[in-house]
Amino acid sequence: MVGEGILKGMAETARNFFGSYVSKDRLTTVQYPEQRDPRIESARSFPFLVYDGVDWHDGMRCVACQICEKECPPKCIYIEKSKDKKPDANGKPQFYPAIFDIDISVCMSCQICAEVCPFDAIKMDVDYNLSTDDRFGGLLFDKQRLSKSNEYYNAIHPTEASAVDVRLAAERARQEAKAKAAADAKLAATTPAQPEIGGQR
Amino acid sequence: MIHLVQLAQPLDQIFVIAKRWLLSYLPAALQPLCSAVLSVAAILIAFATLFALTTLLERKGLGRMQNRYGPNRVGPWGILQPIADGVKSLTKEDIVPITADHVVHFLAPVLLVTASFMGYAVLPIGRNMVLVDLNAGVLFFFAVGSMMELAVFMAGWSSRSKYSLLGAMRAIAQMISYEVPLVLASIVVIMQAGSLSTVAIVNMQAAYTGIWPHWFVFTPWGFAGFVLFMVAATAESNRSPFDLPEGESEIIAGYYTEYSGFKFALFFLGEYIGMFATSGMAITLFLGGWSAPFAFLTWVPSYVWFFAKLLAIISVFIWIRGTLPRLRMDQLMNLAWEFMLPMTLLNLLTSGVWHFMPGGSLRWFVCSTMVVVPCILLSRGLKHKKKFQVRTYHYSE
Image 1 (cartoon, rainbow over the protein chains, first blue to last red):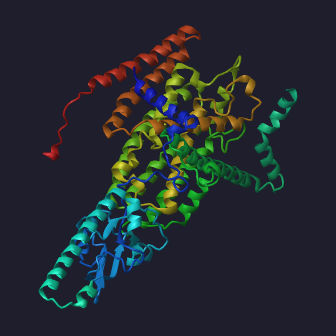
Image 2 (image 1 turned 45 degrees about the vertical axis):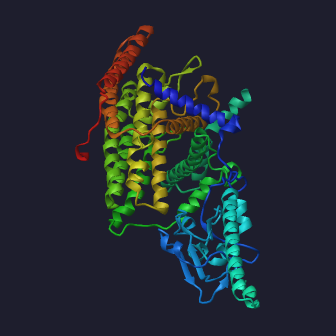
């Protein structure tokens, strides 16, 4: 019959219309500020910098190698290397970023920075409530704003973060073993004790 | 009940009485002018309010049809959303393209709104409630209605943007094509009523046999005419499924791509006001204007019936919009010229037969057959003509 399809379609929309008043299951909309969907573990919004320990500056994993800056497709990362060095997470003296800015209005959330980082220092955040009335300053994040603790990282991406922790711990153990072996060898070679080596670690 | 009936008469005429009372305080020389100004102001306010209400209804209704909530933030259940929208469109930046023809670009929305409001001059929205009772009212209505096409093309042409121009071309093709069935569908009523005056047409329908009204929609030619008129009216007001001129997935917003802020709101207003005007005309021609649907309901004020019918038609428009996908350009043109036009012409013939045959069930049978059989044959013929094949594009190889 002519117009049968139209009538069928109109019956369907009418069913939706009245059904949405009867059964709440039909309404899939999440009323955002009051309700939140449970977070998906693999969700990602913008990058952040991971730090170990309690102080964001001392524990910062970033060594200002600038690989992420070079790899970033939309060039939203700006890094300036420090002149001096500070001990990194493993206690090794390293450069650190004097300036580390990410313009999240430019960032496209591609996660390439997190993938290329050899130090597991930059990871993807899940926070998306970033609206601001200052579209320039409010969207340019400096290193303090970008720094978030390893505990936070463990909380938002548990699987990924624990794998990183295991890897870092293994690396640290390997370094320690190596240093110890080197120290032992040195100790064996030069019998008189040299307290400075031990003190250096 | 007697008491109620006695009250009904003044309540029905309350606006007419109020106007007369207000005018009695003015000198006689000023009265005609002030009378016109008062009526125009009333129409402007009533239909602008209806527009605000409809935008909300549409968003809520469409939302529910798609299993969403629709606006529910501004005020309780989002009922203040139109005010928020209005403030937003007023405070937005008005951007005019640097290459645009500034004068025409400015005039287009003004003309559109003016043209869409002009039609209300001849719409009887209640008993004794019509701005001017022109003896060529229907003709006037369609004449000013076609001015909207000019406004649309002015907008598309002056914007100097490819999307605007494409949208305007589509709009012109569509509106001119559907103007023909729109007018032809309404001619049957003029044939039967023997008058072009909208007031006379409504008065003819405001009679009852038993409890049933003499609405033209309750005749075979009237029903066919009403359906054809409504399809053409949907196309005339550029509403889904005929929203090709502003198909956002294809040409951004069509002819008002380059409009922003309050001018955009004016276009929006003009479209809705135009839609209400054609719906109001459909009510006047086929649904008995302000007359009550049953004889025992005549105590309800006449303007209430008019607006109730208008809201019902608007709801159907929203329902259709929530249901049907957009037509393709060739489907649109085929529908207009290969289905609507022959059907309206046949309907003219049916109307003539109805007029000259003696009343009775035979007349009903003959006229119904004259409407239904060609409708089925035409649509089947169109279906058979459709060939499904691999489409090759000349320029894609």
